[in-house]
Length: 93
Image 1 (tube, rainbow, N blue to C red):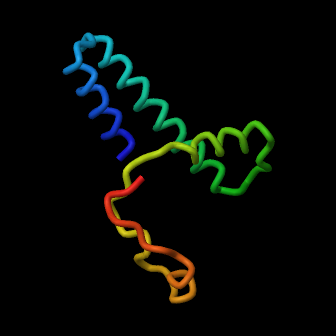
Image 2: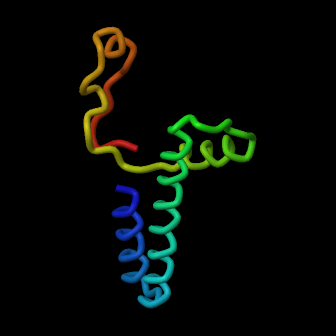
């Protein structure tokens, strides 16, 4: 969804008058950044190395990105978890 959101942003910027070629470069860079962040998180999830201050800061930055959620995040939760969670209308950030 983050890649789609970046593509929508590029198209909106193009409609506002920004150069298509410049936006194509920006979009490909953003997609590469997202791929790199995904690979970094996947590597951290392996648990084979200690997470240092630099890595923790990068994880915090990645976790702070906002995106539109369109799926119900209560699916698959236990009764106890559901009792602690308040529902949010979809889509939501």
